Image (tube, rainbow, N blue to C red):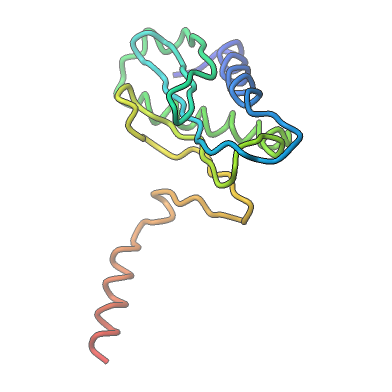
Length: 149
C-alpha cells in the first residue's frame, strides 16, 4: 500500500493536532498515552488518550479499499516514521504529559498492536522483535549453565 503525499500530510497533521492538545509551558501534569487506531474498513484514523477522549480524526483514502492482511504492519511502519519526524522537530519535548509516555498502535478492539514510540527522560531502548530474536535460547543456556555450577 502506497500512500499519497496528501495522506502522509493528513496523518502528520492529525498527529500534530493531537499533540497540540497537550502543549504547555508549565509543569508536566497529565498522565496518559496517545493511541492511534486506524480503521481499515472506513479509512479513518482516530487518535485518542487513555480516557478514550478523541484528540484527532482523519480519513486516509488508501485504507478504504485495502483488504490485505498486512494492514497493521504497514500502518505501524507509516506511524513510526511520522511520529519520529514529529519528535525530530522537537515538538514532543514541549508537551505537558508526564514521562514516560507512549504512542501506541491499537486495533479495532483497542487492543495494543505495537508500541510505536516511548518518550522518556532517560535513554530508553524500545524493544522490538529483531532485538529480542534468540533471547529465550540465550537466557535458557545461561540459566542451565548457572544451575550446573
